Length: 585
Image 1 (cartoon, rainbow, N blue to C red):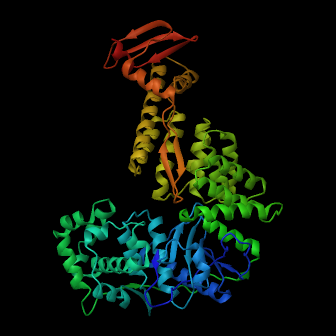
Image 2 (image 1 turned 180 degrees about the vertical axis):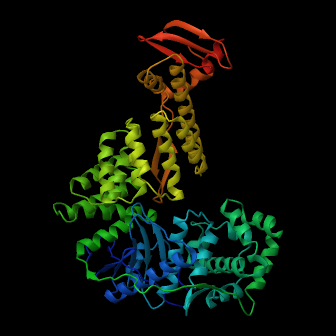
């Protein structure tokens, strides 16, 4: 989020639509829309502002892609919303100190700016850095996130390069004339702190964030070891501890360095070679009608965790207003579905997803997320929804992975593997799910070596405790299914009997684990392994304590390193391993 500079109008640009808090005032302002392949802009400031905003954002995007190799693959064009005045922006401000903000939504990303004026460039760069950090998977502490955004907000094009790091006078004055926050307190500031949300305190926090980040990047005492420091902090180390380990400096020493740094007479800046493209994308602005403007502002409110009450009223009004209007019914129900889902009302979300589909939604995200929310309840329906999502957006890797998962859960392992093998490139953020689904598909086809290789890769990308637990449970399932298959072969079973032996792993209660996905209040989809069912728990207990077996004893083989025994049940031959037998013997 970008704070308004003291003594100047808030810079900004980018787009959108105003809702007049619960009143029927949509359309009181004229809204303009324009778009390129990467951005769409909605603004009340007119066609000229829309075209200028798109040009600036495309240029910023090109700089990061060309000079730093950072080019986020967003699910939809980034939506830029630019208000013409502070008054129009007020209903959407997440805090009193905000002049603009970046917002990751369920189906798209927003950059929202209030009160457009000539100083759009710094705000555009600042908010775009927040978007980049999200898509690069960087989970930086707040001070570093805002400090990095402020550092790059100073980028200035000079001839054939882009200069980054020019010291802004307002930041220098703030830390020179005020007293910087003690570092222990500074590092503890979060999104709820007064030092971040109120005008009275936020100025120093932003200026100090810029100053410390600038010192880390461009001061010769700190720049050489900065990568090691950054790696430590991004891995979760407390900054004070990281300063001690990397620079052998205490918090007090770093604080004194910072006090001296902001009083220097000159500062280094970085020059990045940069050649602006000739064509930044053409945009033909058009005026929006009142209903479309109402839709966009409602979608924005529905994506803001801090605006629950306002969003609830706006969503309900939108659905009522779109009733019977084929042009807007699907969009209205899409918005209502995502809002209900984020609020934890899954049944209401399913109801609106179904109505959006029935109204002819053309959003791949709607079909894919509807299938996700259905979970394992209607796999055949989920399959059809995901096929539609894939048809609408063939290049979307996440949809193909979800489709493969649904195939695997229906035991269509060949279709699952074929869907996975269609994927040629995958981002690190998508790799875990791709490899864990691959493991299930290979295991279902009795390709055990490939299944284990996929599991090893999934484990490499398991970046949370819940994912690591999931891989552990999936590995256990695969190993037990493989053991049954090997035992069946050892007694001369046919291929069909081998398949039945593998399936008995599931019939006896041990099934492949399920990854449950939920939506947090901030709109992020998080994953947790589903809890064990009662039957799975019973099977786990059996393995630990042992349980009687019904059937006719056939043979006991104690030769070799493992002990095996066979019994007859349900007209066939059963197999079991020493893991259970050892408890009884």
